[in-house]
Length: 102
Image (cartoon, rainbow, N blue to C red):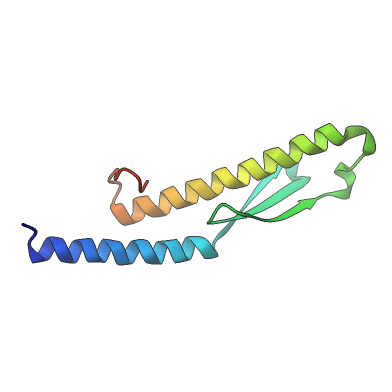
């Protein structure tokens, strides 16, 4: 049977996780590729918010290179968003590996 202290700790953890989720949703990270010629902004929900391409990177002869740069920037942004979520979760759980949360 759970005692009051454990119940209070579980409620506190739940409240902290809800706050963290709200903070993550408002957070953004920037992924880049090609030395910054392509920039992808991804939010904490791992949704692409914006994509900026330096006009110098656009050439009809190099479409495949531009496509690769876009993919690399978006993937970099998603990875940074995942790392941010993991870092915030570790702050709340004190580094405990809780399956399904980290």
